[in-house]
Structure formats: C-alpha cells, structure tokens
Image 1 (cartoon, helix red, strand yellow):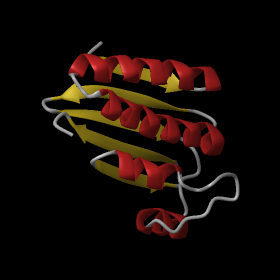
Image 2 (cartoon, rainbow, N blue to C red):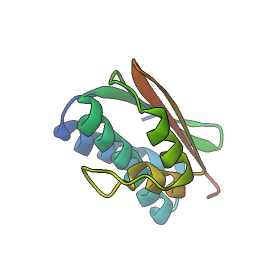
Image 3 (cartoon, helix red, strand yellow):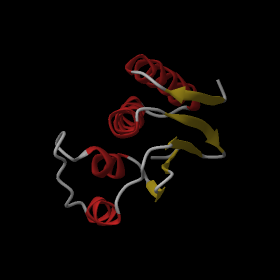
Image 4 (cartoon, rainbow, N blue to C red):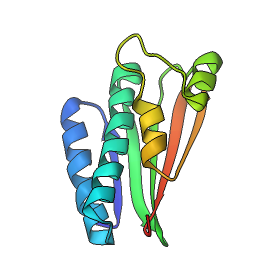
Length: 130
C-alpha cells in the first residue's frame, strides 16, 4: 500500500491503522526496531485524537526517502500554554502520563503541530536511513 488515508473514529480504527502502518514501513524497508518506533508514535497520536477530540483522520505515505504521517482532528485545539509545555517536554496530563506527544517527538525525526480552536494537525516524518 502506497497511501493510507482513513478516518479515526473508534478504538478499532487504532488497531487497523497500527497494522497498516506496520505493513507499510516493512514494505518500505525500515528495520524492525524503526517499524515499532513509527507504529508506536502513530498510535500515541491516534489515541490522543480519540481521547481529546473524539474523531479525526490520518494519511501516511512514503515520500522519497522518508515516511510522512499527518493526523488531524476537529477538536477545540491545544491551548497555547499546553502547546508550549508539549514543545519543551514539561507537560503533565491529568488523563494519562502526558508523554504521548513528547514520546512521539523522541521516536520520529520531525514532529510539527498546528493547532487552532477549530482543530489540530500533527505532522511526523522518519527518514528511511534511520
């Protein structure tokens, strides 16, 4: 599969997305360790969509020599003070460990977050030579 594009609406979608990401990264030639890193990062972000916004969507694909993922939701956005804490690694969640996005940043080469009161987009990349 060259492109994954699907809605995020339920916990069942999380399992399906994880399986498809695993298949795509294996086919792309990532090492087993990096496959797990990418799957874990994507699963963390998808869980956040389900927990905080209820639903959203995902696209994932190989683009030249990197795996690129975009996850979005139509929730109320991430408050600026929370976003700053997420960016510097000091955020503590009331509903979990608060390490989902910070952990994702450690697993991927690049993570970028765009947020507004009408939703959030998160972009992730992992180079093939990682």
